[in-house]
Length: 239
Ligand SMILES: *Cc1c(COP(=O)(O)O)cnc(C)c1O
Image (cartoon, rainbow, N blue to C red; front, side, top):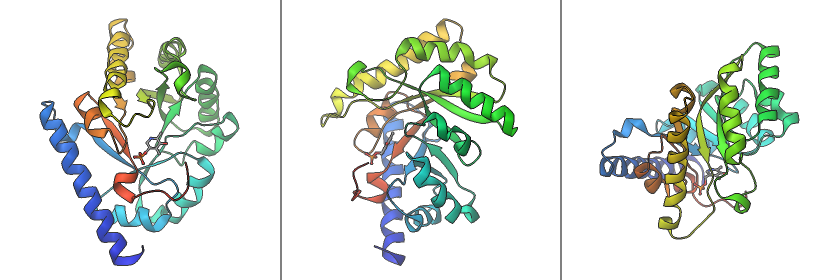
């Protein structure tokens, strides 16, 4: 799909997703403005990003630095916000500082420190989220709770990296009610960190929820949802 049909389809999908976010927020007694929609454009090209941007979408998510950089360059005139949501290899840290508005998938103390060193060198602030693994063996990436706590302890000491909250990629279940406990656990983890004195500025965001479960995530307190398929359609490539 290209041209006007693409623009119409993406605009209609975005409107539907925004309406569902607003309804879920209302069910939870939350303001819809408290939930940011990150449109996950991985595997889709600049045409799809432009179609979404034309419909008012500003935040985009990509999971591979290599794939994202040329796409960002092709859309540089649009002044969009780009979020890295896939695993960041340490050797790509330098390339990702600057182009991305937020690195959501930081999952080790080593990587956090390495990013801070790069950011100091480049003289740039780097907003990040700590990706937490609350499922143990079931997910490939994310910091186990102890590591995540160590990263949050480090947060106030970092010079240029701004830890702004938590990100979760739960195991995939068809039944969203089986995912809900993971969202509740991330919120619980956040509350536990606040209770032990981590400054609230480091825990403001909860990035959780994807196409099939974002409404449940919003009900459970998500401040950012990362939605690909429901905005752009089914991906041809596995990602
Ligand atoms: C692909 C991806 C998403 C979006 O997935 P959909 O099911 O297409 O909405 C969200 N978060 C991460 C980390 C992803 O890799």
